[in-house]
Length: 92
Picture 1 (cartoon, rainbow, N blue to C red):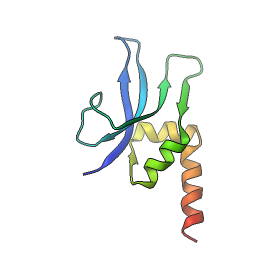
Picture 2 (picture 1 turned 45 degrees about the vertical axis):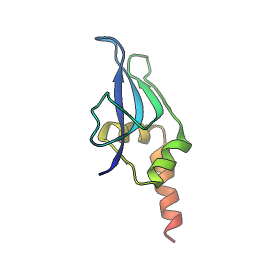
Picture 3 (picture 1 turned 120 degrees about the horizontal axis):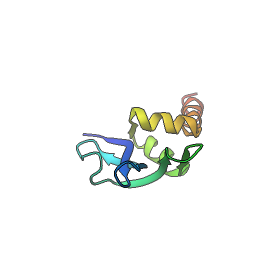
């Protein structure tokens, strides 16, 4: 099937934080995952986003696709920009 980079909800009711994980597309949102590659906490001011760039880039090279929410986080942290630059450099 495929592999996605997506958010996994954690935390108590009304107090969410999210892990950025690599998971099989068939596994449930907060179920089994392959590897955790970062986290996002919307409850801090400003929101906290931490991404292990090396792991994310490695999974993108292997064909993992980010979900819409994960794409926003990867864009804000600059990881997707570096991925696009690396792809553009490699295609020349």
